[in-house]
Length: 137
Image (cartoon, rainbow, N blue to C red; front, top):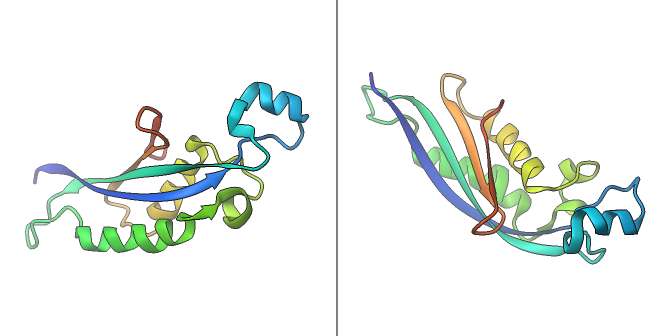
């Protein structure tokens, strides 16, 4: 059977602050710039979840995208949308919420819910020009 990648786009809005609590405010500002604002700042994140695998001969799907849509809603959008990531999302209580770390957290939450025969990748846009992709490696 052919191997195909299906994609689902989603978005969420969230605030965060990039900082290392072991550093001084000056060092945090030097490393993270405006992103270390103690009063936080926000982004309109764009998310693409990609699922790769063989087409199921009975359904014609790699994965039912309505199931993927619901997983993204319950696992990601409900957990992250309109939240302060540093304060309200447990995964970031001790993890700096960089776009890299956010993508890994999203991947891990979704990977646990998608059958292992499918490859999963997460592309997360923090801005239209800054984005990362994580696929579990």
